[in-house]
Length: 244
Image (cartoon, rainbow, N blue to C red; front, side, top):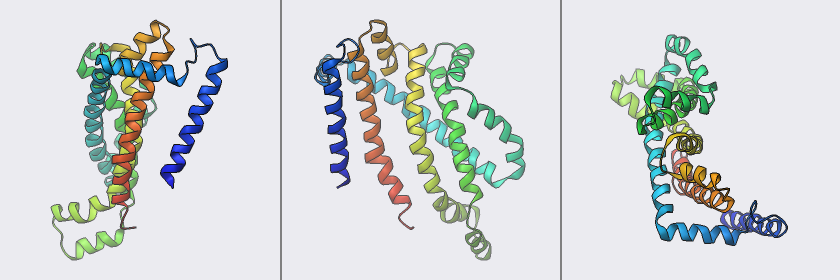
């Protein structure tokens, strides 16, 4: 039923797009069929798969770095008042710094390199993960803490059976919110300073005022990220919350 509702809403959006494109200038709003034809041409030429693959690789690497560091930082902030007091202000500064500023500074300090691109995306994502994980670490069940103390759990057992099960929903929430943020920032990073990827392709076709290509690349990559959320992150979210 949910899938049918999604397909129906998608059909309505496509119908609206087609209807509006009939009356709009083809240069500013091409029809869905024109966008599909462009996507097929790019796929046949290999450019589409190459650019999408490069961007996905950047998203994956920066996402793993941001999640790993953000989870550790968030747990430390949630479990230690001293750490929270010392790092709360720097965390808020980075969290509220525009992604464009962080990206530009990364390129200035590290050069127009792949490392700078990854660092820029990871820095934009990391504070979001840390804030979510901090709230999770602050809300641990005191009853389970008391049980762990009573049974004299060692550190490894406590982490495996007390800490992680309670933090898993927060980790998945951070992942789901972060993946949507990460891919958008990756496109900005590619647009500003990389010679390949979806962001580079969108910028290239923008300079040619090729709206069909811009929409085509945007929709393809958006579809890939939605598929990752629907077939990977949503089932994972349901799995870690099954005990509730």
